[in-house]
Image (cartoon, rainbow, N blue to C red; front, side, top):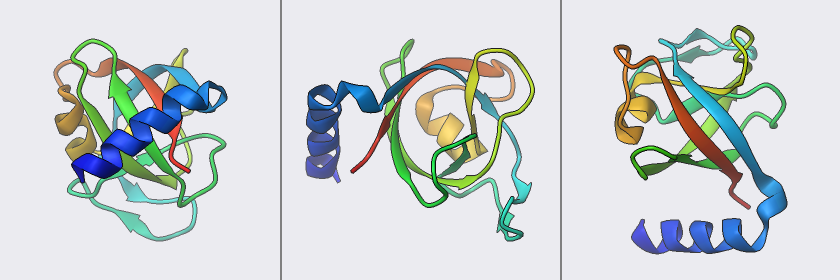
Length: 111
């Protein structure tokens, strides 16, 4: 996993056009745009336009923590500057939760 993360970080620096900067929020999951269900223990996120099934590297700009997650739903639709909704497991890995509500993050599409 560490080697994969190193490769992803390297590629994200080589391919900066795949980066997106903004806010991440936390949501509980539920029924997805495809009709299946998301549960809080999954490493999944919601993104407005990336294809479902896309793997992304999310970097918390405040804590420096990073995680790889899969786009499994559409959103976020509420709030300015939000680029991704994270399930609780992803948010916890990034170092924020319901109490903080939002985190400043950078997204990189994993090729």
